Length: 523
Image (cartoon, rainbow, N blue to C red; front, top):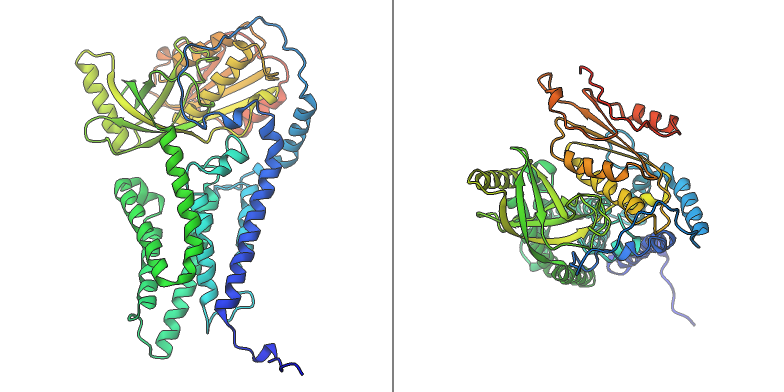
């Protein structure tokens, strides 16, 4: 005769048996979501002519530039037209997910992903949290792999998802996972405090309780130092505190519970791989700094010929004065020399004065130039490249690029790349781009005018119809005569309305007039 079974309604809830099951369920859900995203990305990654592997080994040097030609002839028919049509159809299908609600900072696709993620974090389902808040603690532990996977810069996901899906693009998941971890930890800790106070038990004492309180305190410090104003004003302090508290938090969690170990080792593996890949990507190069004015510093890194895609960025460390320990992300504003349209192709970066590091570098460069030097000659350390554009402009007949102020460093690199591929390489990869509208909103555009002149000159008398609109938003004191001459451009003293620009771009299928014009209006 079998032993009697206690009815489930009379069974005591054992969180150390039931709650780990919810950790496993949550892990299966987010891993399945990643697998689905990778499968969906396979067709577009495979059709990018090796773009997905570009830069994986860092910036490189070559013995010479690759051959470039522009015979004006159309490229031979490619065998991938059907695949390209499928990609364009898929992009059109998912295009509504790119719409961003005002002032939210997220598009519809990202919002859907976050809602699905929060749904998977089911803290209160079938759990007596008031009497036993361990479920929240177990699910806080389950966030560790997600937080670290989406926080590191050299993630395997960036390679699997293709160009443009680097750590910055995926950062929104890291932020949400961190908030979910903090929320779950606060629920677990606050209810535990409540129970201890209700039954008159000591808060501190045994190792488990003391290390748990320390873990929650360290997590609160991490979260309180994360807001953008804190990072912007006290970045050096934030960086040191962030690293030290994370290490202390992981150690305290291991002392707090033996159930933490399985969720700690994967993040340590992710960090180890990230550090190893960074060592392979580090480059020490000579560079020349040139101060355009008191607001902008141009950086030309020598002996860099390949290894990046237009729109990607590197983390730059400039060895000058006492700022050798600081690295900052800067976008590469030129295409590789193999097809760049610039009269003096190379690896260019631009740093606008937006903090103490950029201001110090600008002052240092101007001091060197005041002593009669053409620029400041320094050594730099490059880490990257990272991120980039998820859209290959060569797949589309028309392209509309718009940027404000120093944001042109991203769109200028894309413009140099697509014009170079169409003109200098003769559409060797079947590029379809025929018409490009480039819009820039700026106070004064002397910074990048020479580069724009080189690109427009290369595009003239070619199969690419390039038109540039520059909206100058300086004060009434702006001198119209000081505006540099850029072929096939319109310069307007006004602030643009983006929806009007896009409407005009769609409404004019014919070519823009190839005449130089300057249209100046009062603001």
